[in-house]
Amino acid sequence: MRRGCLYGNLSAEASEESDAIRARVTSVFAENQASVAYCLEAAIDVGELAPNSDVQELAGFIVSSLQGAILVAKAQRSPIPVERFARVLLHSLLPQGDAASKRRARAAR
Image 1 (cartoon, rainbow, N blue to C red):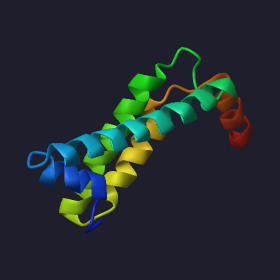
Image 2 (cartoon, helix red, strand yellow; image 1 turned 180 degrees about the vertical axis):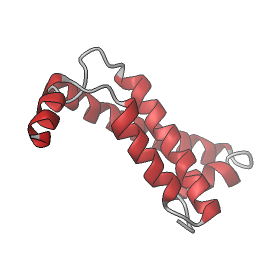
Image 3 (tube, rainbow, N blue to C red; image 1 turned 45 degrees about the horizontal axis):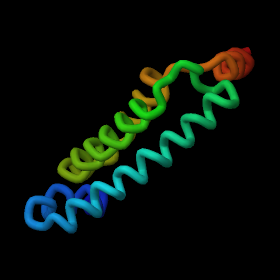
């Protein structure tokens, strides 16, 4: 937690000083968002995520929120903010599809 994320650090520390750095960091975050959106689409396809989920909106939120959690974790030198991010994301924010609900019900038995 002491080092944070390379791209988050570059964004916070150097993006105002260099348009080239800002552009590259922006493209990395866009690539991350596209990867998360791809995974969310796959989750919809297998019924793990509600079919009406806005994957682009969710992916943008996930990437931005994770970066914020990493920044706070770095300042606190604690994994707790990242753990909280994961817990809230997985248990409260992502709408669950039918397959996930059925799997949870089977596991509870």
